[in-house]
Image 1 (spheres, rainbow, N blue to C red):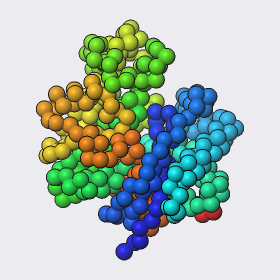
Image 2 (tube, helix red, strand yellow):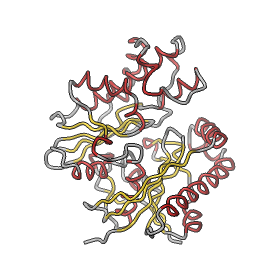
Image 3 (tube, rainbow, N blue to C red):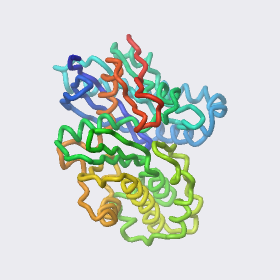
Image 4 (tube, helix red, strand yellow):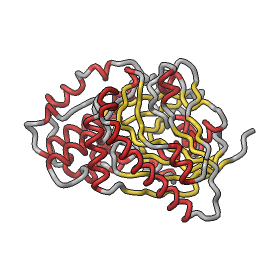
Length: 366
């Protein structure tokens, strides 16, 4: 039996807004104690530099040409992650963490071509914090035929067991991309990216206003859904692809929305998120008894209300069960760091399409 370790998880998501930091105590199996969570925002200058480089990073060749700029940003991000660790450690002085689970910032995700690139210097982070760092969670999975994403399903399953949810149940994370974890009767886990989450809505709002996102889904609520534009999205081959499957935030674009106003665009893109999720849920033979939503998109009332309307079922927010929905992914990487450290698998054929259950994570010791 493994002993319980204290692990700090760091997550910088596809919404590129900052770093979520969590401390958990776990054995990498069934024991879980969430100690604390904090958030460290990217400043506007770093956010702008990151968005620019992500936009320009369209391929591995392009990556090589941008390497000098990427290295500079990587160092900046690493130092900021070290600061985030320092902040949460200072706040929890009595806890001596054993591990750090460092996801880094995704700049390019293309598992079809055999790669998913996250920036963040694990050696430097280990040196700065004088702690063991586990990172590079996706690489082994992709090398073994998987998508390298989604990575949180095993943690979602643990949450469902903690809240004693009747199976089958589903956890949906609405971040930049939306993904679903479905746990069946026998505890078998299935997972895949359903489609865009907040990424296109945020991009649309930023292109039309000086705001970052559609707060509470207010713009969408007063807009009109353009069905022609919506249907064009669903003609994309991604929706006919077999599961498991995953998406890069750059996969879809706003090109077909050019004639729409702010509110109609928000309503249309929000219904893209809603319908993608509902289609994903309906793919399972047994309808989930409980559906739980986490991630930033859970705060968008338009999205949540429309999922309920289409599925004709009460939708729960993960916060209803005393889990903070903003920090599920940072907790997941703290948990996966422990699993990686104990050489346990972190992905499955039914969650990423990997050939066999796969261990992951590279360990960097100070």
